[in-house]
Length: 513
Image 1 (cartoon, rainbow, N blue to C red):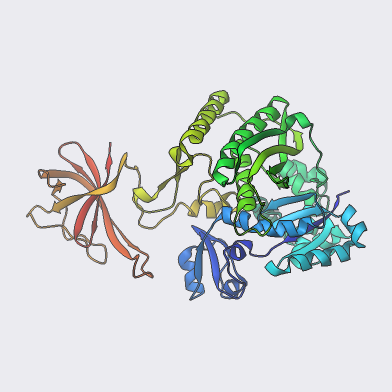
Image 2: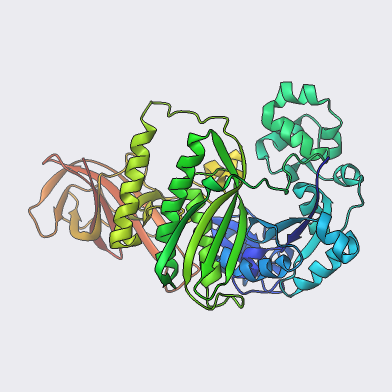
């Protein structure tokens, strides 16, 4: 039997965290729309749309960059308000938190009274509270602002579409089989579901049946698994505490791995020089050292933010990271091509040490990013930080959308250049008659390129070329509008270059090996 759970859900939290109201047409954008306001939805905006599609559907739409760190930081006051009703609170994600209702409901006089009080406490951000058996059903109840009586959770879930399971591939298959509601899915025999859809399909079947297998009554792990660090002098800046948090995250993962355990819920504790104690819990789907460090960083940023009315009055003197709930580790698949994981861990610790000495920006890693030009397709981020856009929600998108994320009209085809110049070099390109080669507004070349001169150097014959690939970017923004065309050329001296012409001027953006 699932535990009675109260979930607080703040609709369109990325929009609210950015400082906009539901009446303003706003969309939070990360390559695609990840959230939008009620006014934007009324105009036809939906999650997953491209920028141009969203702006075409809703004239006057305001676009805001996706900021997971800011969303987690802004959610801290909401968590503090809910925590006044029950100290054992779990943050599912920014905008959603959950508590077990057994104790609080008895104290406040029942589920209905508890839900009403919590809703009133978070009404300033449009939050809603719902109660049902298990976190999954409770979140759906919160979206409807309902309290589901005990024993009626399966009936409540039965009318929802299978899409709410947030398993796009499974939902797509169920739709094709004619199974469109949770009630129809729950009516299938569990043995048949396991045989046809596997272990993940069986977990989804349990959710559809109202049997949430993830209780909120988290087991407290043995104290020897807690990892702690002290600050002397007290840490008043987030950066100082984050360095320690990353080291603690690696240490905790090593301890759990040695015991054959996997982390599913993390507890972050901090103490200040004034004797204040701060505690938060985070649910994790995949507890890697980077994921742990990311949650701790978000929490520290929320605690120490100037915008937090409940911010501590002094610097942190102690930081503790502890496993709140652990499960047997079912093992991890080794790399397809082999490899020693111990070497990866040693390299991660070395990078962490360098960051501790030189600062977070001293060690960066290249991550894929959207764009048409080679300089736009790779972005450097501090090691250990989450990639800015592409990792966020792609796993939750249908496979066809994940493929479309990589498509940029006008993008130069493979192979990718080996060297990308930070400052493109000046170039000149002429045809066989010595006339400059130009590209019209329709993307047509005036002639085939015959010779090229780079940075004032000697002229070299062009032996092969491809292009042009014209691009008309940000035509809706007069200040950022750019129109250019790119060419791939190979010259007689054995070199190959990626050239671009913009406003009649040629430049070398990159070179090929």
